Length: 298
Ligand SMILES: [Zn+2]
Image (cartoon, rainbow, N blue to C red):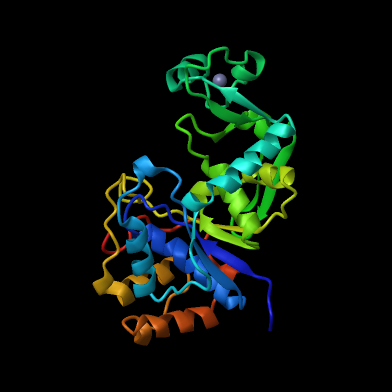
């Protein structure tokens, strides 16, 4: 049965994949495959100072070791800068973008909460000797999604976020802009990712509206934390996925996603595990929260 389902997994090459990445990769892969869809991999390498040499290749090798084979050539955001620049200029022509020279300490000093106060909209920076960021003017509207796992989620961008940065002072394009442009250009119809990105989704919906891009379907899976309640990441020293434990880790990840394997498959080859999980996949079974914090081995 042909389908228009196109999903993706979009890691940043800031370190090796860890157990939290495996949950997101597996959930997006299985949801795509269970809907006879295409599964794409996008390397979000927009922040060179945070990237680690060789990490992109290591991520792709790890995905292959876990049986997660992508259907189209991986996309690298670092090769898309001209496209992001074109979109920035399009938004500038619409009068929606302005330069901001506020430093982090100025923002902290001026603002009680992280919502940008619009200072540089009212007081355009006068010096060109200092680097500036580009902020996108936000409207008063309320932007929301009906998430397949988390339910209704929305924000009034003006009250809760403020005008946000779409190109950073250092010259790098912001994640919010790049992700929306890429999802649009790649025809992504379904986004399955960690719930740490839920609060940036209304900003992405706003950008979709400005670019006349369709709104994809969203499913935000819970983010796994360590014993201290911190999200697993390189910063919290999450261990890299061990390629010697592919079947064990896949079985654990599927159990956390409320899709446990039968005992006979817990140490089976990963291709068999994935085939079973794909056949039995039900998006509505995915948990909105995790009932336990620390998985085995992390
Ligand atoms: Zn400013």
